[in-house]
Length: 431
Image (cartoon, rainbow, N blue to C red):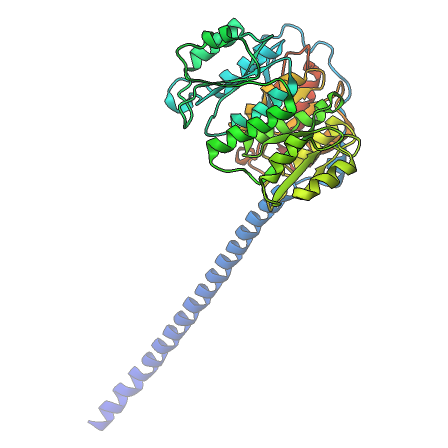
């Protein structure tokens, strides 16, 4: 019996040991495969993570080399003289032209672009009528574009409301601001003009002195929003400074800041408006010392902190303001990265720029960029600095877009074509 048991044991023991060896080998392989799969997964995850980081980094540095940047920041060559033949329209993929010949018609273009008025949610609250003949009053009025008025600047001419403007008011059917005001009339007009607006809730702010009027507008807006905003834009009312000052329009349409005017000194009414800020004013001066002197800035420092947005020309300063940003007050566009909108206006048509201020308020929230007859080196450099690029997916953006103020007689089709190309998203390998 013992012999039989030993015999069975001798037969089964090797089989048992072989089974244990196979199990150990299988277990070891399972563990090895798991580790290998985990390492592969971690490697893939790491690679995937690096891909996202690289894409994000590419967007941060715009994905192009210094050589590509420098090449892109230059004017093109080899122009096509036939480009304008047989055109059906003057629109391009990255540029929308508001194709008007005069500022009154242009103001209506802007109104119809921003306020389709198809239903209550895209009707304006209040239409602002400003005098075409007084750029200071018209500029000061742009602060009223912002909420809760939420409406366009349309022009009166020689104290009258043009028929086309009256037609636009009827199309818009403004729904009223928080006070129920549907139309605001800026500056001096005759009673018969106000009679034209019979049926609308009208508020009239008379005046013909831009310095006093800017103070009155700030007071009106402060009453509507329930506070005197501590941040304020200071601009020169001198005729020679007009193009520098108008740069403020898109910003004050965009936010609660108002504009107050100075000359070679700080006028008493402007001082009184600044004093309401109790020494806490955050003041932003539009222009270099050639526009607003150091002595005026010294006066302004009595009322709070002062920062100057400079530039040797209006075109240069418009780019400076487009990239400027004060984080403490959140004043300034801060457009140093791709993915923004811009508005381009000709220095030869400044009243187009004021009527275009609502594009800073809604839509793509665009700063104003002045165009000289030719695109400046500073503008080429700015456009290169915000050039959008992609690694492998152009659908992911970001995209730039621009509005051009006026017909091709005001801003040429060739200039539009250059801007359109400079705004285009491109592969990060492109030059």
